[in-house]
Length: 230
Image 1 (tube, rainbow, N blue to C red):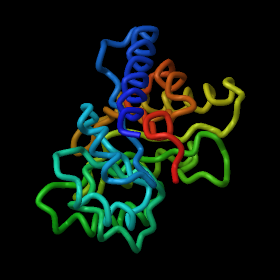
Image 2 (image 1 turned 45 degrees about the vertical axis):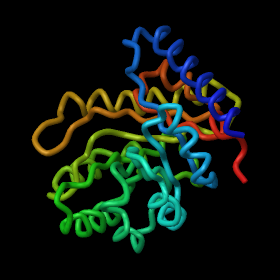
Image 3 (image 1 turned 180 degrees about the horizontal axis):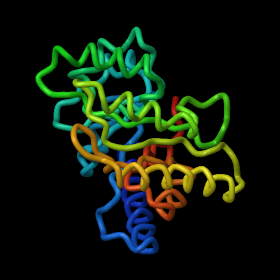
């Protein structure tokens, strides 16, 4: 398994590099977040041994059990839907929360982050696929949520995140990613003060090359690195 993780990670990095080249991006533009949901600490540390610098967990409870056991520095992302009653566990455990999708959640995180030395970095999750099963603010409501998050003193908005539609139709995936890219570019022209628009997080194991072609500078890859989850 450990050897396979090394091979898989090398393949993913090579594919990212080729996608960057095709998109006209400088090499190293895209940050790879290894999605470690349902994978062991040993598997995570094997990937860290191979130079993986960012990991993403979906659930606070699983992260609480695993993250303290990781023996080396790593940037920790919360990428799954967060319930407000778990917000108190987030500051200090995660470096970036990618899944802020409502004013109520943003306020809960802000209140919890008030006790921390540094503001909590967050992304706003946007539902660009119009799938009810997915979290995220709908694009037509994104302006209002962005304004709200930007006004909270203990959060630092740094970009946008979306999950592509679950489909083999590349045209639908491209449409969803282009919609987020359009929002991202508009917000980037407005950014200033306490918030920035630096991170465009979109693309997973099945569609990260499409995402990079559409401008993603952060991708979240699990299965293609670690294999099928237990």
